[in-house]
Image (cartoon, rainbow, N blue to C red):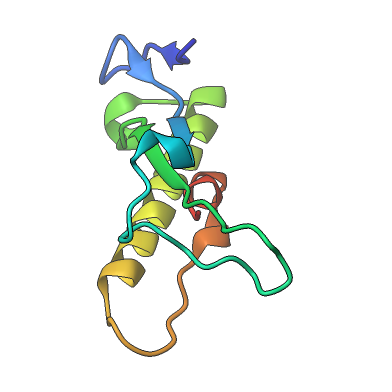
Length: 119
């Protein structure tokens, strides 16, 4: 169940992020595995590795200005945590969208949300 609470800005303010990930591994007899998706097995293994696709659906809690929502106590700490994780997600997106070549640091470890989405 989605966590919600009332604030001055919104009567049903979402207080949590939701991540739903599907791991899809096609069977070799389904016909889905094609040359484009084939991967090489490790040299020590006799079997070919199957590709895995991870599809993640993310419902993010909305960012709030504490001054507008007049959050205090637990709601204030929730708002700070939500805003912090959204900032971390923005940094990850900027790092991934940045330079295409060379080594770059992607700050996946800055929040639980970005760690979940790092794969």
